[in-house]
Amino acid sequence: MRRCFARALARPLAVAAVVFALSVSSSAPVAADRVVVGGFPVDASESPWVVALSSRDRFGGARAGQFCGGVAVGRSTVLTAAHCMDEEALGGPPERVRDLRVIAGRTDLLSDRGGREVAVRDTWVNPAYDGVSNAGDFAVLTLAEPLPAESVIGMAAGGDPAYAVGQAATVYGWGDISGAGDYANSLRAARVRVLPDTLCEEAYPGGAYGVYDARSMLCAGEAKGGRDACQGDSGGPLVAQGRLIGLVSWGIGCGRAGSPGVYVRVSDIMRALGWART
Ligand code: 4AZ
Image 1 (tube, rainbow, N blue to C red):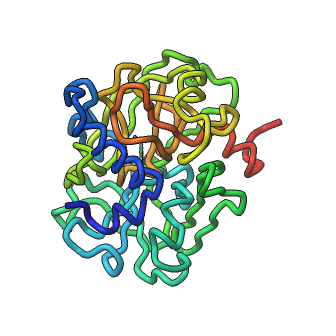
Image 2 (image 1 turned 90 degrees about the vertical axis):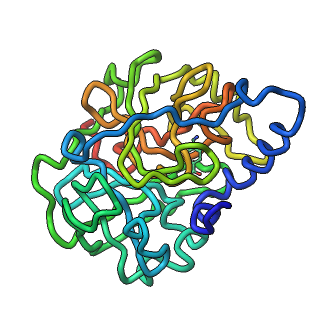
């Protein structure tokens, strides 16, 4: 049974899940098309820049109200996905979610201790975000209190070798570990690779889902599938060579061969926000 917040969060995936359910019930063996994120547990102290976005009012208290990921790029600045902040996810504008918080430094969401919960003072959602193509899927949260300096990760600027095809990268989150709505209570990571843009261009040419745009998006996963981000990981970090290269954004299903994960390209966020040195 899918939890309603997950459905609310991921319109593209909700459609994709139906398509996947249909494809599984065909004669194809499940193993050839398995939806496994393929991750491993990590401790938040090893990746202190990964944060959970939370609203207990909206999403319930069981997992501390976690509904998306995010990443600290400044002591008071968190990047996340625009689709985490849209009406479909939050039921209204972000300002109306009074208990919107960032949880930093907590591995296990079931323990209400460890790390810090910080209120969000301001939410800026990219006005150019397009929920049809999925372009521009980023938002900036300003925290009410700063996080420790060690919690901040550096962003990879355009041309950084961290973006090179074949580069090993790691994605982090508390999202679905099976593609069937099994949300992790404890932080996990999966090792993936930066994949050629052509793979995502072929997988996502447009139509019922988003459109892959190599300038503003990044293609990552495993060509054979198996390791991937999934629902609930959105907005969380993709890290290569110790620098932030992507935010979890969208894809069809999770870990499926031929349907890589699509990330927001961090160098394009820097360009769009005027954070890039020219
Ligand atoms: C989502 O809906 C989502 N497999 C996140 C990541 C991926 C697909 C969907 C990539 O939040």
